[in-house]
Image 1 (cartoon, one colour):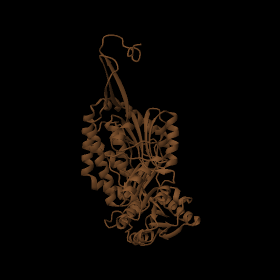
Image 2 (cartoon, helix red, strand yellow):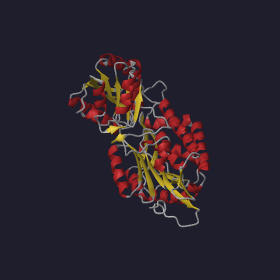
Image 3 (tube, rainbow, N blue to C red):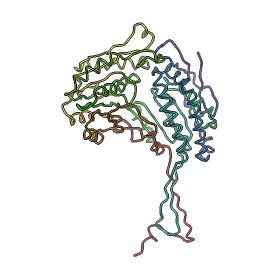
Image 4 (cartoon, rainbow, N blue to C red):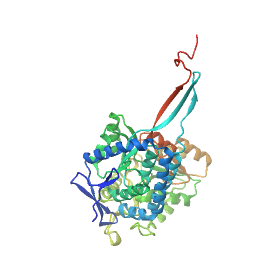
Length: 495
């Protein structure tokens, strides 16, 4: 059983904490992957000191030079893609193809961020006064505290860390405890790429370390992915300290299927959207909204396809759906199954824990379908984060949009239709940061903005060019070579 350390100032160092936690394989719970420190405020302070010291040099390094290191990190990720993906599958249960996709998203982000170090354009604009230039620059903010969930343990940290470093910030990263081993491999990539000591620091732990990062006065940015209620607490705490905050929170994402849709395509999209990553994505399809004209035909095909989902250890290349991350999450999923039944929804598929044979060692659950779900039910409104799908019957396009928007979240959304008018109206009317037409609610691309509306976040957009709005400040510069005192707004206009 290997015991792991924090990574601070370019060295693997022990925590000051005597508390530890284990990371285990959710498909084979007896397999302990490592023991990690539940770090303290003192550990965070040490990471802050290292990050502050490194910031002086790193922030002044020409951005394209920073980009060369980030591109090298991307190349190392590419070379180690399969190795890291296998570690990820063992640690969080995600099937191997999805784990490789997770790493690939980080590779794409690394190359994109490296390229953007040559494209951090400012604006040059005419001054209102003669012999005077006006221009702007992007500048780094300082130390970024990055706190992420376990379900995308490489991709989501990469969305934040590569752009933060590209912009000249230094980083303190606290991964979710369930993804600690994968985070260790991620840090090793930067170490191998030659990132200067202190630029990127890793602190393991749960509540104490996370709270210390959020509250530390020298950490200027908080980039968080996780639950909405936790995000609200972070926003409140960081707001009192006037920190820059990026929140990517929950989702309750709808897929609408209209009568003109290609039903076979829509079925495959719903299966992938609802049960990919065992439904443990903020972008998972958790509400399936079907027009009554195709309801019966769709559900017949859908249930048949769901019955063929291969469930098991994600390292098996034939498996399509792996385990739930841990016992606590499984109990939550099963709790929502009971809630749905108590509320009057009709459980028409699944709903049980799998415990026999190959499932006996892990946290496995059947893909689950509820029908006759109505907007007043908790399973319609609340994020479950498991393989539980609510199906809603509607009579019109207008009702479908109304139902889709009738939740407090607004991350991803989808419509399947061959009707151009319906497609364009959905793009216009769906309350979501992301809308797919004839594709499922999952599948973000690294060069495009990612984020949501309503309780899904605070308006920040990671991914693409917009992420640099999180990790940079604007500096406006005036250069007056007139040789005299010029007073803006006073000397500009004459009576």
